[in-house]
Image (cartoon, rainbow, N blue to C red; front, side):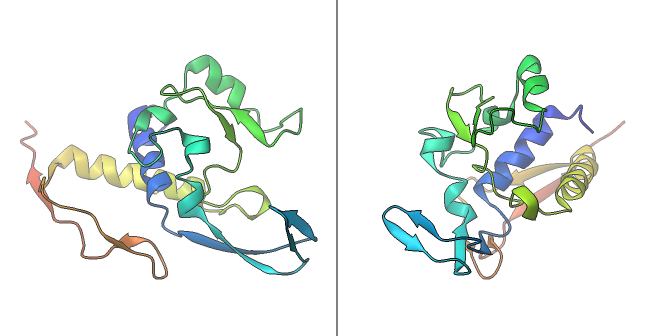
Amino acid sequence: MDKFVLLNATIHETLRLYPPAPTIMRNAVKDVKLNGYIIPKYVPLCISVYTINRKKEYWGEDAESFNINRWLIKEEEQSNNNNDNNETGSQYEKSSNLSHNLVRHKYAFLSFSSGIRICIGNKFSIIEMKLGLINILSQYRLELDPSFKLTYSFHPFLRPAKGIPIRFIKRNNN
């Protein structure tokens, strides 16, 4: 499954722009001063995954655009980034993005949350998406009406408000 580099990049970029859970709830574990405000311990916080996943500070000027290049990692950078132990303890990591050279915060992609509260099914769901897409795309070509404009609903999960009109055209696999 690791050989499908473009498929992996497409899935991650889709999840970045359209996270299924656009917000997550957490409680402050200690008193925190943030932008001049005191957030007391135990106060519930609503974190906007949707907004963080689109911050230009982390994703570049094209943060609102679909760009799979931000997930295409050069081989030498991939081996360096696979080390989960950040020896410096920094909250930032060098971006492996080919389209820009930003320093990306390690919590810039929150579609599965992160840290100790990360979704335990994140890897399984990526594998499921890959298998499903490989199965569908090997049998069908998909067409979307070019005039279609996506609108979505945030209640409680992010999803298309009126569906997505996709035409499945059977491939002639001889």
